[in-house]
Image (cartoon, rainbow, N blue to C red; front, side, top):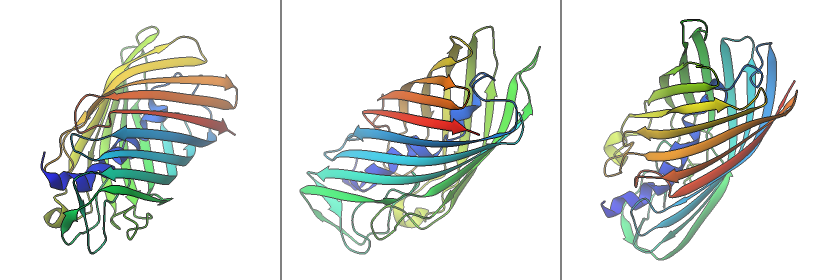
Length: 285
């Protein structure tokens, strides 16, 4: 892996959290995702750490505030407003000049830089991340002889501070597809999305990319659901590895209006964090 990939390490962290937002409500039992019209407000904490095959060790923390709207069983809209914190320790090279250091923009790019220089130390940045909007519409509902089939659309708004290296100042968007089927208490599922980056490919090596989740879930009861799945895709930038990790996620409906989600991940390739974890709390009304 070439040394220039050090500049893009924070980007890979956000690829893990920003692109598959719709998956948070796609596969759960109807008792957890109510069929009646409702809203949901969520607050979470997500943590990732890794070196992505370089000499730079990075940690990334996000505190996302989410707002969901379920007007009916077929449609779900989710708005995510994240506060982000990044800490990267470099022992090799770092970008300097015009925009300095790495950028993390909802997982989609980096600031324009004008050179590189030897660097050893810590780089810490924090602030508002890029706001994302994800929509999912179920064309076919899970029933006798039919799977659950949905179309999705993802949009990233460039709200992060580009001067701090927290964003690229560009929009990203992409269409997606969801497919799942309940077979007794088991539910195999797959969800994929193609993301079109708004950053300049000529300047930073950005590429449009594909990302997908594939796995199986199990409904322990009408209040508890667990899923084991893998996240994989194609590289989002020249010189970076494709992401591949394994995730375990549990959803617990504490009461009629309160739900908790917890997940763990273990990276398999240098395109994913070494490990990560997250917890979210949702209140529906």
